[in-house]
Length: 342
Image (cartoon, rainbow, N blue to C red; front, side):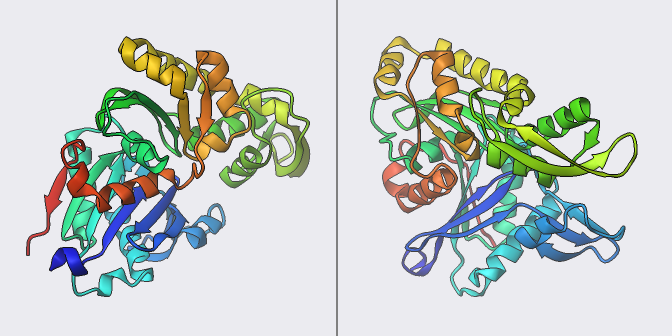
């Protein structure tokens, strides 16, 4: 009865965004992972896009919180509030039959972190909760047949982490998670502008630069005008930034992704390496949209690199598909699970 009437909900609980997928409906919510909290009453004022717009514009008694850090829950209470708000918006908390929920997690999270995510899913109303590692979800979302004895390689560049994995027979043969993602790219731009222009910019401005002209390789002529606060005078100031400057700002982070990718390839069994050379590497996540990223990784590894059709939602879609087909994939998916008890 539960299987027939209960919803199946997949959640990509990302550092930057929360994406919710419902079986039969697809992606139903894609919101920034931000919460505006009244510090005195410990009450949620806004979540998602509305909270994101308040960043840097709030009075002292309102705090903007990002409850996830490096792909895992940093503030359990606020994360639970955020998820409940999103589910309430979708009217999922009013259903008679409690849903099954699957949440994706980074490779190599600790047992404590796994339990925290499962507990959060149960607390927001799951009848049964499952976990799936992000590279596996990304591979499924990209349309790869993970249960076959064939080598597939996925790089998922998210907001908090980059997940790199070689998959075969439904499992991760070699994998690595590094704490390099969209947030670190934003921070690198803030630092670059401060050091080279003596100007302070906010997170939103840094993200605007990254999205509009950010690049992993030189040779782009794009420019953008930004506003900030001059460090010397303390007054507002406008400057123009060129795309090629972002390459210098991102250099250390790009090198980190390249070196981690090489380490995974070096540990990959020869038979699977041959498959990867034939099939190439699949790139997913928001970082896949950075200009020149696929070409950069390919030049560093000498392996073809392709961006998935829907890099931003690939993990959520894969998580949803895994939950729908969990009976068929049970033998190849090593998922943690927890069951609701009243």
